[in-house]
Length: 273
Length: 276
Image 1 (cartoon, rainbow over the protein chains, first blue to last red):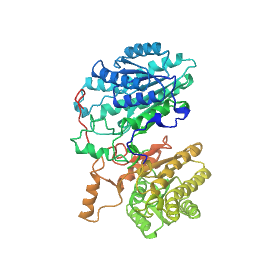
Image 2 (cartoon, rainbow over the protein chains, first blue to last red):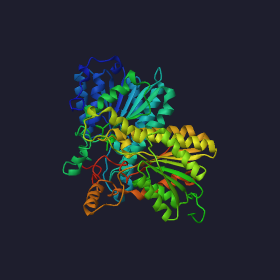
Image 3 (cartoon, each protein chain N blue to C red):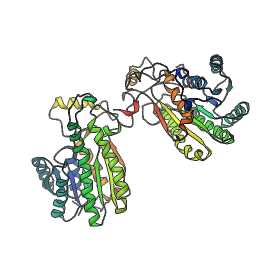
């Protein structure tokens, strides 16, 4: 049953060489998020060294430290950083520090996401700014700083993976600001792919749909939220473990010719009537 | 009828073929082009229906003839174009609208038989190719360019349970883009109309109207489309109003394809910083 929710244990798979990330240095931005943490685990199982960047110096640090201990149990070294993604300079300085400590950055994943559900008439300037900051600007800053570090690699190159959402390409009431910000991130993938390709840097997006950690938009008290989940073909919300294998494939040696694409991991949500 | 003042939408002196114009969307498009001044050749398999379309056009002061045609036959489609040229001296517009659902319903994918698949492909995809090719041949011979409008379906852009029909209409979309690319050097434009859920005619009774209202609430604009709403779009695409537009899809679906992630009533409410 290929659409079941059973997590894939990559370590238990025969392990084709192109899915191994041994010796690769990976930066995960928003590692405190469920999907960021799942990608960190999958990368650890694939052999990567990890920098776990959390967006705020609060309980996010605690959950990242917990993840760090879990990864230690898998025999993977990782370091926790606080990366305030609101300012590009902060992203640059932290990314530089991470690159110095790891000796470079080969893979950068940005899972920054902040949902706002509000009619446009009640969306304030400052709410729009925050939504843009976490759903678009953060991805822009991470791509800018990471690609700069990847240029310095010998040989030059790297993989950038941006986590986005299908609301960035399809409409829904109360999601004008959020959807527009993710639409911008998805176009960032396409635009930057052309610019970064000569430097050996690929950039791709993973666009998720209705996921099991998204209580921010799938309020269980709202019947329509349950109906929305049943719009997926397997009729279930996706899990972080549904997403992580895509991030492994995109980071691996088999995906070097893949760039500028936004892949859906959404249970077919966007592909049927 | 000539639009006054002269307008890029004016079709006066132009000759248009509309296939599948015996009813529904095709009839609406034929009447819209005729109302803007075009001489219209109405084609469909059933003579009575296109004769009725012609009667309505002529009673409104327009010009049209009916040419019964099986669009799944390439020879018949070639003959249709020849008949249009014989009647009006030239051809300017081909609206390849003929098509239809058909095919067995409620079959599992693995049960779908060869002949049903081939029949749906013939009606919806081969017919469009034959129509586009015959028109292009005539346009190139005339040396003054031309316009092709294919009618696809929103089902082609998303999967659904009908299977063969959306598959064939997906081919129509690819045909549109490739033909536009190949024919641009001859000043022939090729575009596609992509309708969503459109009523083919007025409701027969209150019960049917109610069924339509119930289906309509699932569309973002909260209603199904109506046949006559295809006319203005067909006129835009057939006329010089769209002279720099080619290879494009024109979705007319009340916003359905722009959404579709959830019921149209779903409006998640969430404040930044609120517990999730």
